[in-house]
Image (cartoon, rainbow over all chains, first blue to last red; front, top):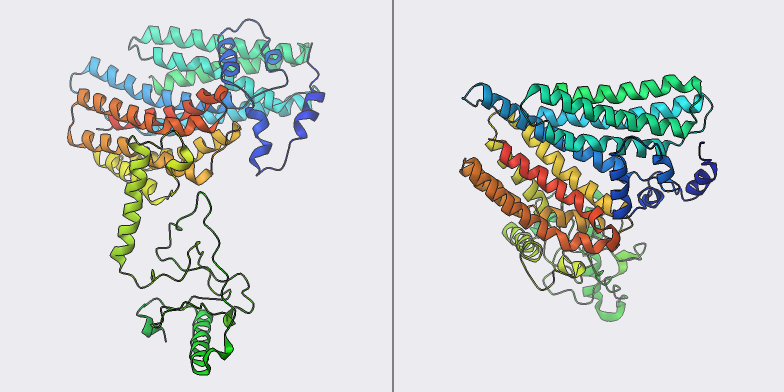
Length: 216
Length: 282
């Protein structure tokens, strides 16, 4: 059953004081430390599908912004470390140098994904008639990326087969999280099955991109 | 007329005419005696509690034009000394932002070394307040009362330059990444605190985050000179801890205690990423 969030939307729009006023955005950051930690931990367990209930009337963009930023930094840092380790294993001469291009690639990839995909789903679902809330989608997709942070750390292990196993597990967990929550939010009608499959595949594609680009 | 003031900055044409007008009035009133005593200029506004001590891009301090600027040309400061200093630019022709100073000070004609020395001493005093232990640490309003943006600018550019020197390839990209990371990071961190419902002053926070980079500057310099990885890690960890310790009281007192970790984590993340850049660039 999809939560009726029309009432919630009305309540949140009353505080809008314009695009350039900070106080109109503070409503999306109205969370305490323990709330954020709680949401983070719940995003690690894909089974459940109750993330939107957990957000309730209080979706936050703090998670989205700082999880993506942390992930960008981790990918750039550990990607460089990983190439360093692999190079040290294969040839003794370390002619490795820090590749700053990883920062650019990580920023474009992660920020682009976490902004474009929820917005695309929001517009698509609105077009197809079901009510969707952009902030909740952004929040959910942001928290779904949190599992890639320890994954990036684990991908340092320079064994290729292990890396693929790790990234597949993480990608599956993240995709299941996204798909189950999306299903429980929208109502799981058969017409929207394509949406679920698309969400699953996009998240898996992101996981594979992370492995292939940063930890080749 | 401008030659007598020994400055070589070409004046705006309208301000030149204003200055001429004032000098004529001064000469006229000197000749006509105290019969035409003019109303005194109203006192300059009191300094705000956390003031802008000087606009960072303008070295000289020009006193504010009087608020009633319509008939301002008739006003005369009663305490103008006998040897006329450069007359205050009254009227709306002056577009230079003024500060809360009293009688006109000779900052236009002072030697450049005096100006530089004053700014440098302010940077040093702010540095001592922020980065080193002192009794004002727990009260951030008092700790950085006289903030400025020169110090942060120097520290950020110095860090970018040091990283760029250490890099063997893609030097300009390294500088760009470091500078963008630090500058955008300071702004985003401040916005983060404001969005979490905290109370800080935007530019004061930028200034503080810039000053807290000083330990990392030292660390980067040491890493530039010594190329051993172990030493680099130790130096970077120590300076990272020092920077975080310097920024902690200010950031944590600005927000609700239940959200302290939310405000502090991004600061830590930024300093760790800069520290990582320092270690990794060789």
